[in-house]
Length: 312
Image (cartoon, rainbow, N blue to C red; front, side, top):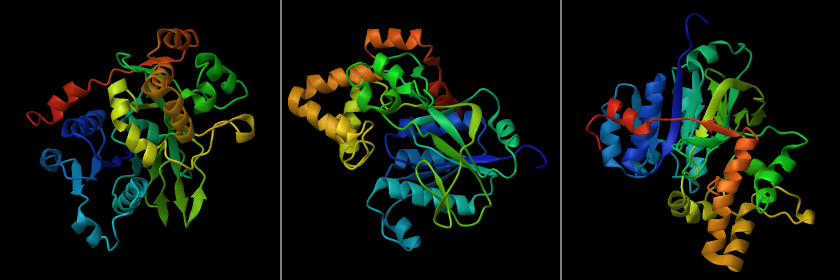
């Protein structure tokens, strides 16, 4: 490839206008060539600000939007996300396209374009692994613990009460998200993977020196505000696989939270949150002793003012 590759981000978002604009502003500041933003619910304030920016393509996902796509609005938001990502992939002019969420922020140690330029031509996609926000942690994050024979024992030592029920000690995913090389035929996105011709496309490589800062549960109020939706429709919904085999007492998160609520109510949920989020001082100390704390100051408000002055 001659020159640095170009790259874009596609995201189907919902939330407050400031949160959406912070997400976009942060990645504009990082040097993204194009942001493809799909508003999953009406948000005129966000739409008007985004629509004025030359590097942002924004669409309202209303009834007319889905009618133009000649399909009914998918019931599941994950299906809407992957449909929009796949549609964008097939139209994008950038060399690479990343599909991430509004609460995820790329943190590269070097230029993203330079990192992508080093990927061999035959590799269709590169994964970025998440780190997860520590509640009230002043820009602190829990590091990803790689798969290995000792991961479970590390997690159990860090989180003695609930670590066995939570994969790698994370509230949310550990699979990370993908940068997909554009121009390949019959590609479709899933949340954490790529498919080609209806079959999984192996993407085992990881983009070096890049964290995906996942602000899934930055504080108790934020987590609780999203808890019911996630329990019914999102990452805590029924049907997920348990971290530990059922014959060994394993439960998925939906079952775990239902049990905690039934037995201990809101106090039990708060105890779970404080342990897994690292808000508990003893947990924080153990994370530090294990070298699993990362400092990632995103400066979201400063970047919001820079790229969307006067918008909020």
